Length: 514
Image (cartoon, rainbow, N blue to C red):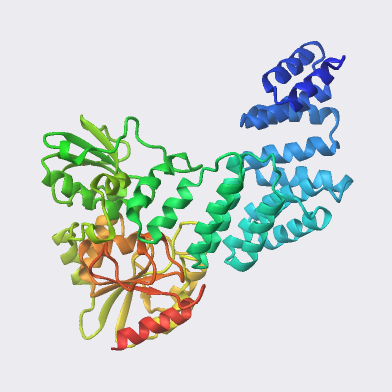
């Protein structure tokens, strides 16, 4: 064992004995509060344990002693990234690069920070610089792949994911390998190559000594392929995914045969569209003799109160009624053993308020013009699901049509186009909740929308709805179908090639003309 206290602390850290390393460093600090190496080590240990605020405190104390130390500033940059303090992370990375311009770790951190500040082209340059200095830097390959994926540059993204997998350390933890495989699998799926994804996962699982947790990725793949039997079981792994909603305390998957006379609280999760899509299962439970309560987002409360058989709907901050069973809404397809052919597809299962509908009808210029609702962009991250209004010009130029915006959020560029063009009416001020949106939808002749909550509301109301989908859509729309087993009144229109919204808009315009 090394003789000096800091050498012993470092030896414990290298051996993975982090508690012993921390205790040695704390003992040193108790005797010498300005011991740089001990403060630095404590900062790194706190980072490893996800105690980021403590890490920043120790690293800041160390920085007062050696503000230019490259190793320290790389770790400070790591800490600021973990706290989403991207300008500070950028500054710490640049401090390193001012002294050591070839530091690949600092270039990687700089690229992350730039990307998070919507300076993606600068970020790409920084990743390329890191990989020029260190071609086998697996984190830079992985992060570059993620950035290219968000930009829709899928072929390039695939190459960088494969490089990240190639250069990943043999000692890398299984969850790290699973992240890389999940990213690569997502890109291959978006390129409509699901068979390759299955082969990739199986090959990697077979050659790894430690098992890889790929259940979540398998679930999305199986659901997309229509294998609901496997997909719903695997979908229960969603609770282990970073950033996912946490399940309600005590949530379980009910035995459908035993719900008679039980009070069941169904808890909404994920996005508004998910809640609307799966609220249909509440009626099935009520039909089997259960008293059903729904807990949902506040802006859905009024509309979902119309689901048949629901005894009560509560909002986000309301007291929950007493219940015997609590279940997450998206666990119900598993409970009911739903397959593609047994999806409960009876519509409408939502109802628009007749008084609100009458008000909207009085506002619309019926005449010879067709009244069509339009939703073209989403607040969800990612570029594949959303269009912009200029891309939809072939559709907007259709004669004898008045378009009505069905979305609350409109970007600055689209808002300027909308005001200058005049072919899409802006109703944002009136759409106070989803019940109001539903009333407007009910007053229209047709809804044309991307994959967003509006699509689900229109489908649940039983209104004609044309859904504009990316070339490879989310799992719920399956593959190569122009109809949806979830919504009998829906028609699916898929991009002819990735990103080709204008060509898709042309197809919709032609369909309107028939």
